[in-house]
Image 1: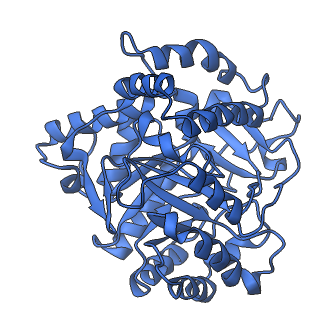
Image 2: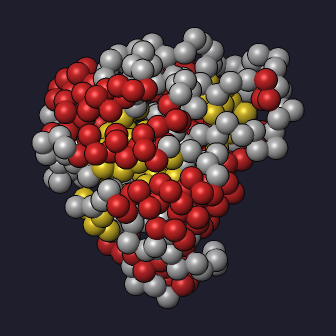
Length: 389
């Protein structure tokens, strides 16, 4: 990703962090993420300090791209732009107050579970640098819903609807909770966090909690959604699905979303499929991807994620908002997802590899694409089917 002249944030990333990401070995991927987040946590808590304010203003000037044509209002939330940070990075919401500074129109916090849990044994996050991909089997490591609520309250966030970036909360099932009690487990989390959420996501698609994907089955998912919607002041509710579903299962979820009045569907989570990389050996373990547990993310997921989104749009029709995620690491990849029917897109693995300037690069690319396509707003581009120009 080329850097803009004078872009200090991008230059720092390129000089200090990018060399670490060009190889599988070196500083542990999870340790690097923790180090970054702990720094962001302190900045978020102290963002009113004059020196921190000045720092954030400088970062925002470099990374924020403002274009009213990119604004949308979806399920009651106003998105300044369509690009969000996907769930999994800020698991406990410790930097919730400052994600807009990095140019994001929204950020999805979590995955959070009703009970705090350590997740799977380490190592559990692996770089595949040559493929711009990652393998993770984190296992919903987080401090729990009650702790997240305290964390968010400590940051003194503006109320929902009045924030510079929309904040979604991604909810998962506690590992020790049996499937037949999953609905109550999710409800416990949402009842604690609903007052702080612009929207909430039912995550039933992580490959790293045993049995979780069984909740994508129609009767199970319908029971879960109906339980959550009975909560007082339930925020707009979305569901996040796996890329490994068969077409008929995708169709079923699209119909269920319509029938249950869901606010939208997020496609997709990480993949159990190795997507042609079965023989790729992880240098950290000496094992091939076919032998390793966990979900694959990043560039290899791009085509499958796009195919799932197209299937959802074909079944659900144009009214159901879709969020595209998986393998988005360029403006062209973001445009493909929008033209296929996504109103919003999210990044994670691509953002790690490409650095902070990926956000303005994508947004500027989308603005330029509207010009080339002769479209007045991004909303007109959603589902337009036009190729990248």
